Length: 164
Image (cartoon, rainbow, N blue to C red; front, side, top):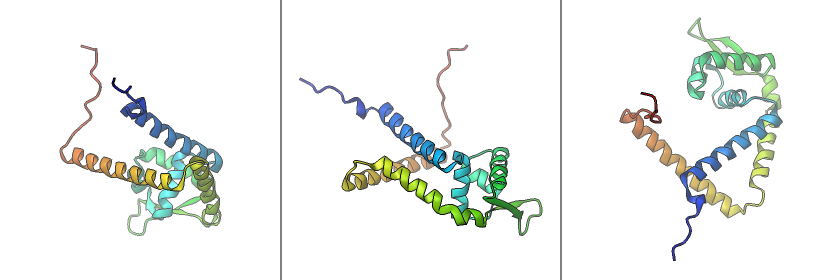
């Protein structure tokens, strides 16, 4: 007698579950921090590399330049970032984190820690480490596949249309 197929092994289940976990993590963090997902991404990027241009941020975060300008203006109004003249390009502005953000970034770190602790509650340390190793391996596999697709010029094939 054959074993019944475990639906947890389906690609659809995996994609749904991992996407939903990411969405819930982001939703909880955003709610607790009071920032939008895109505002958080901008701040995180600037924490890693302060002083980027608006164009660089838009490219790195894959957010339209006009939209990123709106988010930066919102963050500027909150006193969290500031625009400064680019050192060599008069037309460009560099975006910097303010002393106010640096003075309060520990609050954001605490929100991340709280959400992380909620997410991993009940998971044994070794199981958690194994999961992280597996996710890192999956990420590497996907980065490799993405690079291969780009090198081969592979484009989206889309869903067949019923239209003539």
